[in-house]
Amino acid sequence: MIFEDLKISTEEIAQFNTILEEWIPNDASIAIAFEDMFVYFRSGHQKISLALGSKVPTNSIAYKVLKTRKKTEAIMENLMFETPYYAIGYPIIINEKFGALVVVLPPLFNIKNAETYRFITGKQAEDWSPIPIDQISHFESLQKRTWFYKNGEQYKTTVTLKELQIRLPDTFIRIHRSYIVNVYSINKISRDLTSNFIVFLKDGTELPISQSYINNLRAQLEF
Image 1 (spheres, rainbow, N blue to C red):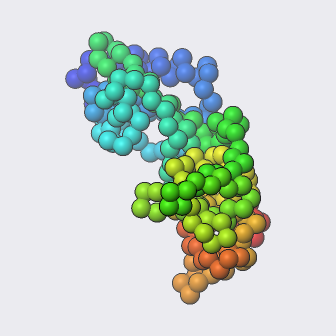
Image 2: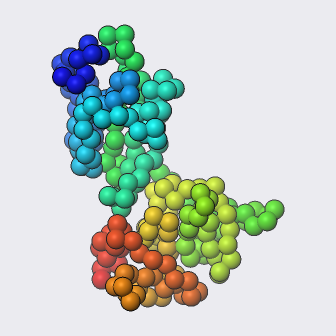
Image 3: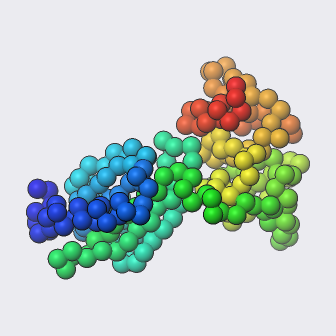
């Protein structure tokens, strides 16, 4: 097998899946990595394709667990899904070899316990202002920073779009990797000359709708 050099049997690895089945959702995904490669994978709702023996990406939770040897958790994002999902990585040891076990929970799993934002504090120059959520027209990710807009004015916030998507009220919809819009700020949705969808806000702002989010937008707005 591809991990014979690690002297770890499939039975030893599979025991973790047996234990986890008792407390994690059936549609969760499980991955186990040792050294710099994945040696076990069970796909859940996400239908993530992960080949055994593939290298652990440096931006993954498994990589962070292998490097820090500590439990790691984060909100993950993938363009295949309209909603961010939650992943937890645990340090494990088999036959004195250190590894990482990662559980990827299904989208929306942890949203029930997330408190909805009622306001966002934004920064302009050296001033900070708490802005009620219903007064914000849209959020934007630009140059690795998050911005939001009220009456055409731009504010900076430390909250990421991934966090916002989970904690904003359902009147906000993700339309693009870089944009979340307030439904009440939408004037109309149209196609451009290349048949791509565009959102026109009431303040005149035009925002693109990416193919990854159009189906979710159609379902929520019923058009």
